[in-house]
Amino acid sequence: MALASFGAASVLLPVVALFVRAPWSRLGGALSGVGASTALRLSIEVSLAATAISVVVGVPLAWVLARGEFPGRNLLRAVVVLPIVLPPVVGGVGLLVALGRSGVVGRWLHDALGLQLTFTTAGAVVATTFVSMPLVVLATEAGLRGLDRRHERAAAAMGGSPWYVFRRVTLPMVAPQLAAGAVLTWARALGEFGATITFAGNLAGRTQTMPLAIYQARQVDPGGAIVLSLILVLVSVSVLVALGGRLTGPR
Amino acid sequence: MLEAAIEVPRGDVTVAAAFSAGHDETVALLGPNGAGKTTIVEAIAGLVPTASGTIVLDDEPIHDLPPERRPIGIAFQDGVLFPHLSVLENVAFPVRARGARPRAARAHALELLGRLAPGIDPGAKPGTLSGGARQRVALARALAGTPRVLILDEPLSAVDVSARAELRALLRRTLGSFDGPRLLVTHDPVEAMTLADRVVVLEGGRITQTGTPEEIRDAPRTRYAADLVGMNLFVGRLMPLEAGVGVLEAADGVVTVPWPEGVAVEPIDDVLATLAPADVALHAARPEGSARNVIQGVVEEVAILGDRARVRLSGSPRLVAEITTGSVARMAIRTGGAVWASFKAVEIHLMVERGPTDTL
Image (cartoon, rainbow over all chains, first blue to last red; front, side, top):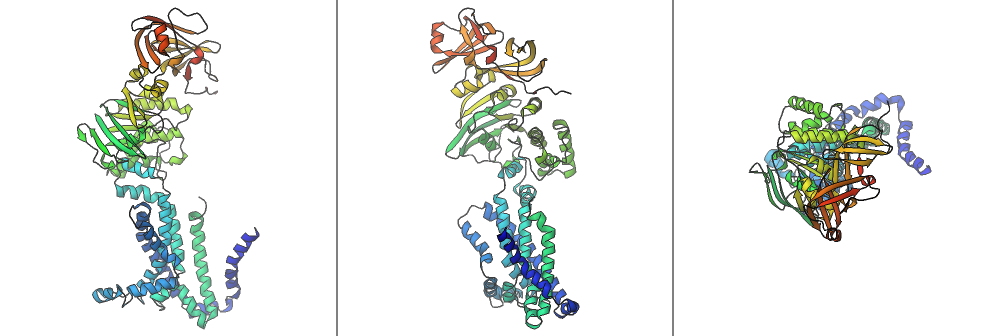
């Protein structure tokens, strides 16, 4: 009980401290001064885009990891999980040498297609996806592994083609795990800092998401940094409370 | 006509079976748990790969088709209904999977549910249903795709005793009216004997005997078949006789039986009773003693199985007795000879599936 209280307190204390030290008297000024609304809108757009891409690409990846029978499957899983273990800044450096203007693939993207990812919102999405996608992949893979295969076999025996069975049986049956993984992915994406600032830079209105804006504000206006932090806390908590009870709590 | 001759790897053993089912025939695959019954029907449905062999339906090979293109309807053991779909969507699934419009599929499903599962809410989720209700929905789903072969895998095993008689009657009607070959997987000899036209006995991944229920009862080829399939089976109306005793009026004779405990003393229709052949004693002359059932008969057949002999008697009712080969020699039992049989009422095992009558 004492340990649980200590655990809860260690999470709560920084949040409470933010409330205590917030410059409540000059809230309006602090908000407009640090470009809060621009950064918040960008944060939400980037995190949602990264979550959408993670689900679209991550579900097939989870399927391959859960159902595929091929040599090197465990290696593939290790590679997929790597961004969770790596410091995000390392991911940013990796992305830079891969997709930067003079990177291995980035050079070709730039010369042949005129595409540049660094210092663009698209680049921020790429960096954020890189870091947060493993969460939805792992959750969905666990869901697929825990599935009772008899239902899919029954569906095939009932005349369902493999794609029809996936769409109407497999996917709905792993939906709870997939949704929980998507929420975790989104939460991770909202807080992404290291890979984004390294790969996409810190340009207000283009790549400066909330964590980056907070980092910058802290150097010139500590009060503004606190206000921005509080906004991020508020958004995260309200989304997790709205969804979390249903997705991660007991059903 | 369904003809299967297949070898299916399953773990360390290979299940091998060759059998057929006629167009209007119900064939039971009967065997103990682990005999390979389910493996065989799953191979026929294309759900497990076969090592070799052919599966031919009406002269058309189907063993190379993927499962979704085989015209087979299965009611799986325990139902295996889709937990996230309503009862209605479960039954509509095979229709929609084959490309029908959702509205037409649901109409077809509603019609089937009304016939096979009346009183079950089509909007309910399978998780809220009883075992018997789930099996009815599974049966409707198996028929929904208008298959040409119907397979029922242990349709009564997850159903509690009180719902069994009614479901058994529904199964008999459904099997009887299905236009095509039907396979019934079961480990329950009574189920096989009462629902099937022909029985395929499976043991350890091999077919040990094939025949009509009567043929297997009269001359079982293995110990398993003798012990489980080779029972004397009486079906008929149970009438009270005296305190604690009743008579079962079977089609070919009357036997005296103990009145089942906890069952109201009144006539009951469709009662099943079994009697182990080893509990039937044979005598050269009319026996003295306490046995309630004494029947005179003529020996129709003597089948030897190891050191035991099964003696089939014509009489009222017809009986099979199992005695030692020594007794056969001592009593000079031979085909065509007259013999007396006796058995105690308490040796008869009654299956009154309705349970105690409700007091209203």
